[in-house]
Length: 111
Image 1 (cartoon, rainbow, N blue to C red):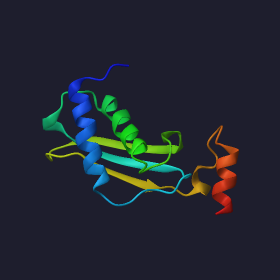
Image 2: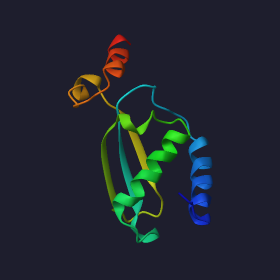
Image 3: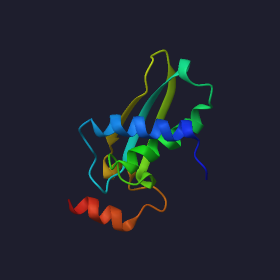
């Protein structure tokens, strides 16, 4: 996959902003995200914008691998900046996921 200059610039800027903020989720854990995307800044499809945001969170170790992401809520909004919130999810709520990692569930319940 070839990244555009604009995408690379966004990754660098967003990554720097992310690194200036505190907080990260424990690894491993199930997690969810809520994302508000400024409607005035893009014409892209909403679902096409989510993967790069989640990948950036993983790259900068703010969340575990996104295979443990269990819920996403995203919408456009009237604001002028991107808002991303992540939440630690309870293991008991998500252990019923078909194919959930038995090793992960064992680690999480041992904590």
